[in-house]
Length: 422
Image 1 (tube, rainbow, N blue to C red):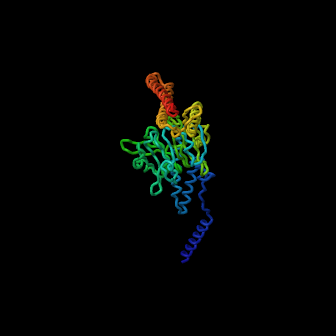
Image 2 (image 1 turned 90 degrees about the horizontal axis):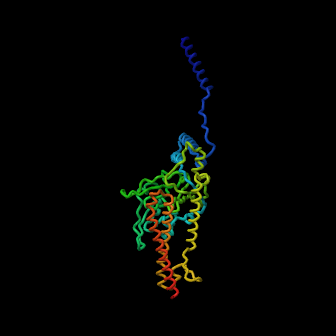
Image 3 (image 1 turned 30 degrees about the vertical axis):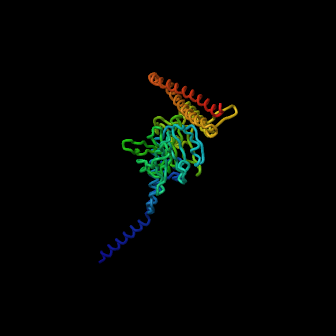
């Protein structure tokens, strides 16, 4: 019996000692991670996607421990991963100018050559109210339009219509291949090849709100190919809208609201690349790469000063042309003291008819001279073999130019004769 009691006493003593040890042993806590001293939004604005990833991962872990939803943070984290990939492939683009304008006044500042088509807002083009800030692109021939329109759910989709000679049009056709790619597609622009389209959309492949995408029409499949995000510096965690290329003046415009107040946007003018070239991350310091992607400094993008000066000159000429058009550049001198600006100014019906022909001939002369200018520039930079090919075409166009000038002079004589009753 004594042995049993002694054993129990020893067991109780050991148990008390172990319990005391447990009470006195400190529980080691995991050290708190060292996080960047910024918010996720600040990291995104600085294009510091590494810090944004750290902050989001910490927030997701914390919310999971507290049994809180993490869907919003996980979706944002996916966008951060996409943005990091785009940062490693920033296109090498030369920006020559920028201007801050009201969101409602963007189109009036994009001076596109008419041979590239025209841009207008939905309300003015279709004479219908528009609350979605939709735009319309019309081809140079005026026979095709592309535009954004809201469906019953309020989501914007891109459509096209054929415009007939009598002013009527076909039924709207949804752009297959593009309509499935994301929500709120808007701001279409089609290149002169008639198959390449740029537009903005919100969707799973966007870095932020709107991003700019590109697609091409597959004539065999009768649908557009899967759209591609055109990447940085054109796209950002903010909203990036319209993207326009003037192939005749070799200028481009794109519109973004990055770092802008709510009612303003910035229009950047750039020199389009014939082939896409990117900054090599291994050769470019990360902070420099971020600045180039954000377009912190236009001058930092200049890799060819001569090309920049040429583009700035072309931009000034495009602005002058637009200003002249806005001021009505139709001047028909009837006498030294009499200048007409429109058809209705003429009293003679015969003069009015010939005035229409005169306007058409003037427009044809502009196109001929523009084509000649392009061909002469190509001739100057071409090889001898290419010059031999171009020469007869240039001579033929020069003869066409001479005939048009002679025709215009004869029309002017006839118009004055009929209007003055000579």
